[in-house]
Image (cartoon, rainbow, N blue to C red):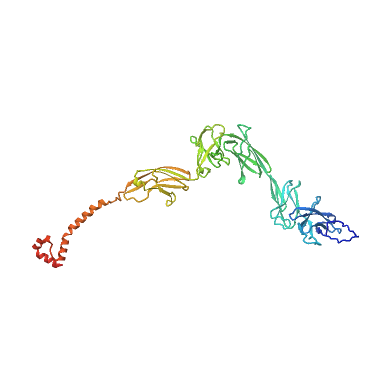
Length: 555
């Protein structure tokens, strides 16, 4: 224990109690080096370094673990720590002049001064030579990159499976040594070098083959100082080899890491022709070849920008150029900055350039563009500044319509405007009375196709409504004006209305005929009931007395 002071003065003429308080506590530890790790004791170093880390893992001190006097591979170290302090001990071999170094198991120990008084020793470390992986590359090749990775999870070094433990490279004789590594797991090695094909021969041995390359250079025939734009270089070869790459500005590119075979190279760029159009190249092992092409410009570009009235660029807007007389057609779309370039416009041809409403492009929300179109005759240079302002469709749909038909104040008051879905005709979107002005406007209809027609609000007996049906499509336009929507009110011949004035004479006539036919019958009934003749029929009764008595008897 340390009491924080090296000496205390005592006045023997006036003895006083001495109070001592421990401020630090001694922590000791050992490192045992396995005998198999050293052939002779003279190889043992005088000491190892032990780093002391705080609880966050920061090194707060470094101490020496010194070889004990018996010289049997035991090293001892110690340090002072305060009560409650949490520290970790991490030993390491700091020697830089040896081929192989020691590693220690476990990698670190934690210690806590939890109580006052004597502290137990830290658990001993075991030291042994680290694992070293030796390998080679043939034929000998320096500078081959060697990656050594963990074949499974390590409990000591905290390496996970597949993580790189050490990176190194081969020396002039093609050999490599990787280490030191903890020996609780196995390791996998990978070798690589740009421009070479590396093949594994064994766990730590490799063969290498130098690959060939093709350097491409394209220059302009018209102007040698003009840089050729980036172009597509299509390289094909035996056994189905394909490689399509984009060159940098200036027309230069290098195809590397190529196996020996026959290749065919073709440059492609709109507006240019190339001489030769295709080049055959026979490439041997490790050989380099140069391919040179001459480019001639045969077409030109129209360049501009697409933006809203506010100046905001519009991306994905389709622009087309059409020459009906020549049968040429080109199209492109604007980029994130609203810029576009129509390539491949032939000289001496007249093109109409405009914003096209192409389904699936960014033009779906565009209502119109200004200018609507531009007619240009293409010369022998690019055309710049061909800008378009576009106007977006409003989010809310608006349908406007005017109606034409026969004016009838009584019947017109019953007219209704009906709007239903064209896909699902049973779904009515809106119904409302036709305004007196014969003009209506409807907002907020769903996107899609709809059918518009007129109907009557109540059934008519003698007339019927004949209305046109107009289809509108809000997918392409949000604001639509249609009309005229024509209708006609016609008489219904199959359902004539019968008025009371026509029925009354008919009823009176039928009643009179029925009464006339029933008079004799009524007389007989009356006589049979009262037994006397009517005054109006006396003479007839006297002329036929028997007949009357006999008919009465019958009853």
